[in-house]
Length: 252
Length: 185
Ligand SMILES: [Fe+2]
Image (cartoon, rainbow over all chains, first blue to last red; front, side):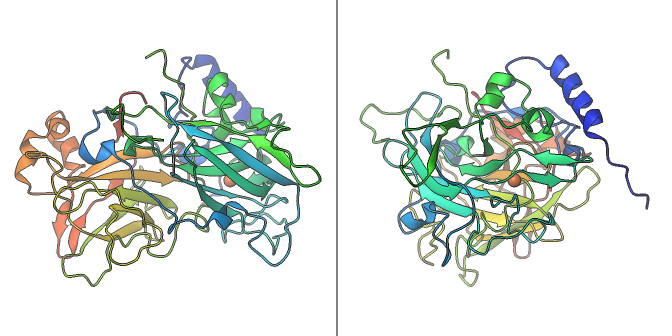
């Protein structure tokens, strides 16, 4: 066994720039075959995705209800006996489909590192402190308008071993369901102005700047609560629904 | 389609989802002891046929009569309500396993299948596929299966075994699973 030599950041940045220069505009989604993210090398399909019209079960999505999600699960700062360390924030936004219809009463799940950039996960070896008052996982249901709201603390950036001195921009992982199975998605929300954006192969795997920008929350002073927390707004658009909506169908 | 909003892009699930996404009973759509319960299981494999220990598989299916269930309770799992949805992280041999019911055809003449979503570290966006129920007479007329050559078609049909169905997911390689994209994606 030879220990693979990790690439330098400048080598990774050159790869990122080269792919960006050759990318077709309007890709929308991340490239699955994106070598600067080394773990993707053996984990991306090599054949084109098969275009198919959704049928039967694919036209519907699972339902979640109040027996599934306690409203308190949307507050990641109250899961332990003490207050977590860090910058207390509110993250709120709307989940809509491609036709601007709200995705109502649907499950949103989040998870994140603590303020020091450490996950409670066993495999996280970053020698930053765990916070006994922060787990970093939450859930909620969107309301009738598609709005979700979480109270949490701002996660820290963290190192990973993709290449030498690799650091992820601070982010919150989001898991989303729509009204159709085909809208299922998991993504990451970032914070505005992060200096690590240009260096991060996961963020840069979305080669169109406008599309990348859609993952960045906006500071929103209207969501900021006096003497309590700062607010970030992040709206989420799922791919369009394929079902034929009836005019009188209750989708709000 | 110019009135369509551009979708928010996906990102990898990453390596650290295990303390957040799995929950008690996530892969048990019905309790394991139920007489009509089947097991749907398989491995998630990379381009060197190495198992993924950090993949997450979700299924969404009709009930045995072909009814698309619209009942909440997938997380709460009261033991009586079949919701049609489940989630299973792969173990350290790359295997996922669900306890569920055999899905029925959602329309007369349709081939029953499990709708499957795959997430993993190293996979920059989710992948969709179908696990068809083997031996069903409607398989021969299925539009998707008919559009594929025999080798590719085979990747979408589960194999019957003693406990139910086995469905391996190859992200890459000679036996690469057919992954799907839908209009508007
Ligand atoms: Fe992360």
